[in-house]
Image 1 (tube, rainbow, N blue to C red):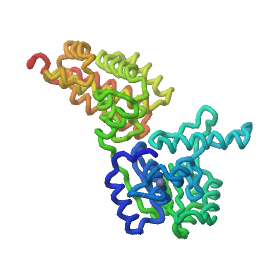
Image 2: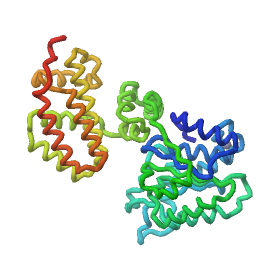
Image 3: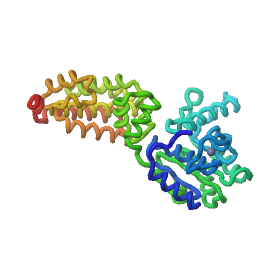
Image 4: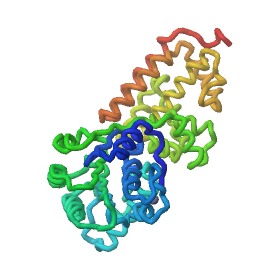
Length: 375
Ligand SMILES: [Zn+2]
């Protein structure tokens, strides 16, 4: 089973209530993607079903193994799925869904991708909730508890949500329902108020760095770098580790150069392309790298270039400072952070990028000359 990284506070809350046999009928685990909400939900299910929980599930008994294989009669994972194309046979569709959900069980920190076979946006439909309610009514006779996880609960259709609400209004005994969500604001208040809401914390950087080293075989420098960029999300850290990092960094450097050179045409090209590709996450990565570059410039300017994260590009950093001695990197960092916020709030991508570029261009004149004084 996958370990739950970090989340000591949440573990304590759950541990205490289970020990006292006073856990809630329903929980809503919420927080940004990649914090381990589903991992914790599975760990909680296994703890309740495991033969020898000490204090958490053993991970190796037959109960634990059947949960992991999605074959335990007292455990159900409800997950958003794309709809079945008319041309696809039911058997093949079920097999694809099952395969993807099994890999999610193996690593719940990674999102499920149903491409290329299934392409419609995933959702939780009324049928899935009805099936779940049917199995709630069945007597399994095998274990004391039954656990249902509704992952990405904000993706329930309204009909599905209303059907689930009825279950929450009259919770059957010894049944635990765990909803997880990255966007609890989109869940009906009537559902939220019937769950114990538990917010998940950012995973500490050192833990993320350790996971990247052990599971992605990154060296400590790279692992540390990505862990700083991941914002406490292990999913984000895995994505960063998988991205073609040097290409995106080159994009960041090019964008920065074009901004300083007031090369509006080049910036417009890039902004339009980014808007078309609709790959907001990659643009965010680019801007995060730009922010690191600006921090490096600040340090290099103060004579601490050896501490720069991008020390392999120190010549380039120095040449930028020579070309723009009055560069205000500090304001630049603030501007880039604001742009990342705007993108997160779904502001029109090309507009964010062109505005940022404009304002970064102004930064080249507004700083005080520090470079060269301390070196
Ligand atoms: Zn076990």
